[in-house]
Length: 57
Length: 442
Image 1: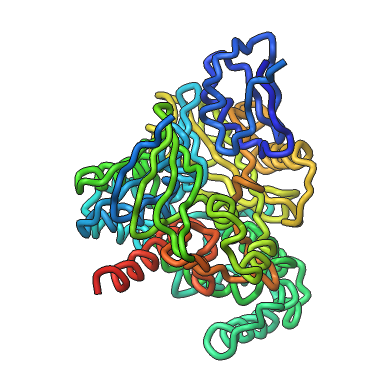
Image 2 (image 1 turned 90 degrees about the vertical axis):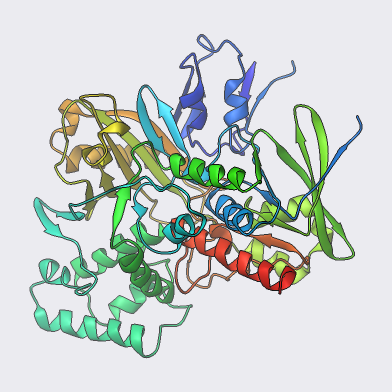
């Protein structure tokens, strides 16, 4: 499951623009729409602050 | 896994303006230069995001067509495709649109904000004295400086608005000294401004092309894991891509990752305590960039500065100059705001909402025709200015306490000229490259 580290995410919204599923929305804070997210992990590569990762459990 | 080994003259970490400008200059001088960038795209805060057919800037929007940034493209012969903005920015004061200051009449606008000419003259005299005789102390805020000469609400607000726009910090927090120096710089560097039709990242790609044409290398999705330090000097880096780790040996390491990240990569134990204390005092600033779209223009000048709003400071309708930034028949508008205080924490959701409410209030057609496409907040580890020039700030040198380890970018911008933005970042690259030339090729 895609998770965001709220301590380091600044809400720049870069991930939103690269998400093929339109599952991310930055409005000050990042919101993930888990109905749409297919865990392709493209967003992780483009996060400037390394705030996105796949939860291990 | 076995580490690969590579050798070059200079290795650059990060492909922001400071990094790519340094690399382009060095490669052009014949040095073997390698740039590593952890993200899949180059540019950093000078990149361009593409979303639903629109182009979104990540930092650099209005491109100065003269000054330190442009001079690097000229020096290395890199393509600089920028469409000049022929209509100057305007102020939106209440319902009235007024012109922005010209370089030969920088304070003419004040007469539009205050009817008491005598009060304006006193203020202008104080400013002239600060600029030509004795600059204010770095401990004095711009607001305190202005309030020595006037209590006129509009005049105080004007300076707050200006410093917010130039230095992303309001008048009560910004250093008066830095403000006046940056204001002079802004009049000089931004006397001719344009927009890159394909977004500012095209300019970064152009520098990349120049580096590669001169035998250099720019590798994306390659992360710096460590700066190698031996006997108090930098001697290379360890980087990692999907194929594994590589040790790159170099005569010097130039970091465009920000001074704090540079310390983390090289190891805190290698830095003097005094230097670490200076870095601890750095205040990264916050700006919020909202991209709005519409199927008709929402205002008819490319850049509109707002006045007496909750948060909003400027509106940029770049597609009026470069229609390529939006799909055919559509318009894209970028708006910028800062918080009241640059000292965290903030309620970012509230900050964004106030920004959008300002858009609705300032632009009568926004409610009906405008739509928010994207919201970007830049602060903390991915800041607007890494070292905001708030009262009492420290200048951080491009040279670190580790020999042959330099920083470039706005975190080490040469204060007393420019605190941030493309001219400042380009200038740090020029300073570092000049030092390198003196040291390694005297």
